[in-house]
Amino acid sequence: GLDVPTAGEVLLDGKSVVERPDQARPLIGYMPDRYGTYDDMTVFEFLDFFARAYGQKGRARVERVDSVMDFTGVLPLKDKLTSELSKGMKQRVALGRTLLHDPRLLILDEPADGLDPRARIELRELLRALATQGKAVLISSHILTELSEICDSCAIIEQGKLLS
Image (cartoon, rainbow, N blue to C red; front, side, top):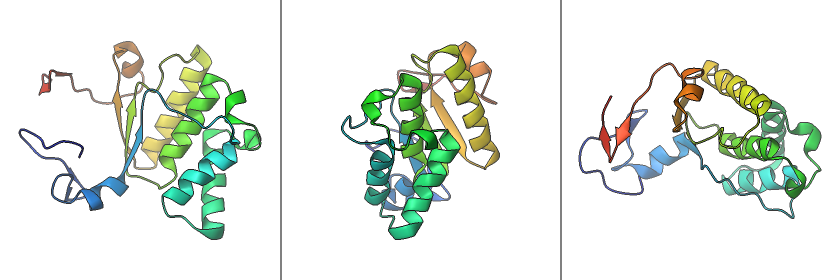
């Protein structure tokens, strides 16, 4: 939705990302490869900030933040500053931010980049759990061996063209 396509279209729940971006965007959760956290905020404050940005209010917002922290395994760290977290834990917080508005499609750019082997395994488990919840997970990565362990289909795009 950031640029007009030269061909084709993308529909999310029947909504065109070009013609109806205001209806399609809430269905998408995006986690960039270089996720940023605000160093002077705790894990809870960071996630609560984004929940507010998504328009969540009151008790429902706090419950959603707690639920996302529990799912991603960062609930015990809720009062810890994000600057004090390991890369793997920061990645979990970033995934939590992506899940706050309960999107149907997750777009993750290099989600396992720089993670230690244990964190990679834990990420795969989280992604499998999300898939069983009915979420579509699109991963952009150049680590094909990593993808072979978690994906059920693959598309190769080169210079904007779908090769396979």
